[in-house]
Structure formats: C-alpha cells, structure tokens
Length: 169
Image (cartoon, rainbow, N blue to C red; front, side, top):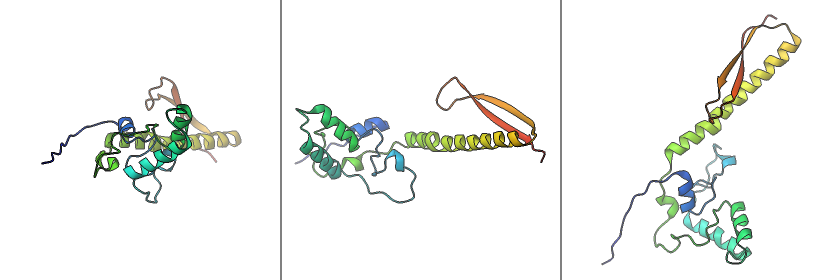
C-alpha cells in the first residue's frame, strides 16, 4: 500500500519563486515578467517541465560544480533562481507550478504600488509640467503648493503637488 502525505504551506512571493527555482521577478503561474505584467494578451502557464528544460539548457552551457558564477548569471538571464537540482524534479505526477498558491496579498500590493501609484505620479508630473508651462506664458493666480509626506515607499522626503484653482485667460 502506498501512502500519500499532503501538507499545506503558506509562503510569500520570494519563497514561492525560490521553491519553484524561478527568478525573483517571475510569476509562478505564467510566463509573465515584470516588464509585461498587465498586458491584455494571455501568456502560457509555467510548468515544472519547462523549468527543468531551462535548467538543463543552462547546465549544458555551464557546469554548476565548476563554473558556478557563470551558471548563476546565465540562470538570471533565463529568469531562474540558480538552483541546479530542484527537490521536486523527481516527484511523480507533481507540477510545482500548480501546487503553489498565488500570493494574493502580495499581488494586490504590487499591483497598487507598481501600477496605480506610478500612474498617479505620472499624472501629477504631467499636471505639474502643464502648470509650469502655462505659468511661464500667462499670469496665473491662486496657484498654491501642497506638501505631503511620501508614505508609499516609507521615505521621509516631501512630495510637492501644485493645485490650480483659477486660470485667467
């Protein structure tokens, strides 16, 4: 009689990527990288076999026992973590990418911080540029400066936003 042991384990994004032998900015569910997150086209799903094939290709170029640094650099180029023998490689009927639960909290935080906040910063920068250009050409009244602490990344610096209440044209 064969016994199957089932265990649950919660981990954050970095631990999930290390477990799956993927690089820090890789998604364990699909082939998305940081530069193409949010694209409307669907991406292929990650599978254990694809990860093992990538590791085998890197191992053909560089031997991890002799050329460790070159092996790690090539793994980073291939969006791998540098693990040359994942523990799950010999587990039958197991796809590590399907076993790992997505880290929803991390995903929401990254989506908000990386996309929404950056979009707002870009909008405010564009408004600031327009206000500056208009103020150079026209007499602008009631422009005041608002300073607020930057809470997004924990810095103590001040971020300035120009608020325009009236433009006489």
